[in-house]
Length: 357
Image 1 (cartoon, rainbow, N blue to C red):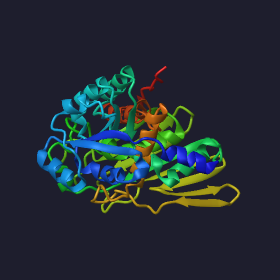
Image 2: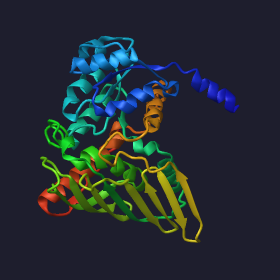
Image 3: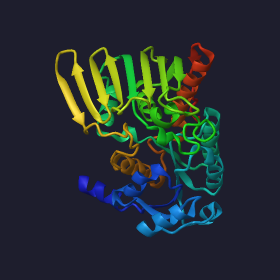
Image 4: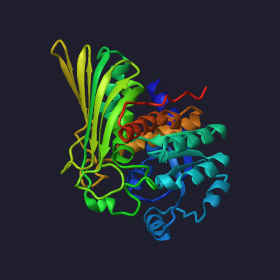
């Protein structure tokens, strides 16, 4: 019976999609597209700069769409992957949603919580799937930890500690628009730590209040923050702490530590260690490979491949993808509250994210 089930999955017709935007974040996408297990077929690519599009098209044999309108009008295109900078997404999402194209979008959704919510509501109103590339949830260790938490193996969560000690050199922020509110929506929180914060929330449930401090260290010349710290109270009653920075040379793997009433779990990048109160322990996952150092893309494409395959199967099975746009609003709400708390110098309430229905 297992063989029959596997055959049914393999027989699924690949989803034809177009990749929009060819920046740094597209390398793992392109690698994942080449794997048949992603269940997709690349109909073409689009980029504002033609030279980059020509280079990618020549290397992979992809068609180039010169105009976004051509993608929207192509009845053979079922979905798009949007990997443009955040300030270029609103028009693209609205155009593709109106055309009935399902959308997989790179994190963050948009630059602000309000703008992110608008994209989510746009897709919902046009009844197209909106998935978000928050690939850290697809690591082996993260999936195992999710199952342990969901099954109650750690007991009740009491304390959560998150640390993102990453490094980016000044050259990274010298790119026009990077680390600005106008293009990116902020600094380390929305561009880097968003992965770990989203993963944290998927394990802990929603945050209720935060008190934070955000700043720019002397190690970077940039508009937004390269350091943020906060105390958090979750709706469950658990409490926690967050420290995130891109000023920690030479960069170390991010970590989430969950202290439960039955065990403590430490997830360091993709490696999970669980120690139960009776002294037994478990270790599982992948080595701590991460984009924590000077090269932001120093990680494998496996997590992207699984995420993209889930998105394609969600379309074929007419179900929500594993990480929906509406679910991703929770991490945007947390980041918005952390930023507001720092500016106002007081505890900030995290705006609840209402379910669609």
